[in-house]
Length: 116
Image: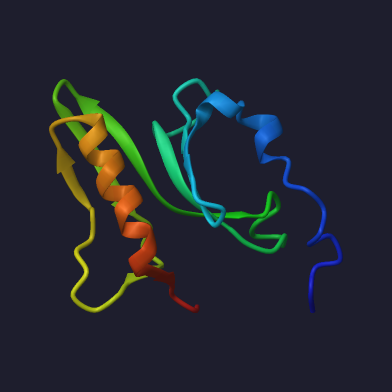
């Protein structure tokens, strides 16, 4: 059954200020969560979707990036994310934040969500 509120605008931007949006291609959004209270990562790769109980803001989280230590950043996709055949997962450590961001952002066009 479709969500009756699927046309309502997302309130994600009310929670995340515009300056927290790193990239936005209209489908996927890469956001920084560095100044967000309670965040467990430094940022997330999100995909817009219909509003639902599992996606109350109209986004599903596909992956995240996190600063682990000096010169060590991690980027990884969620466990339900599948990549096209032959595509490389960005799930590894990087020397810079930019490397982690670029790898995570580049993976967005080659992925889909597994059906559970």
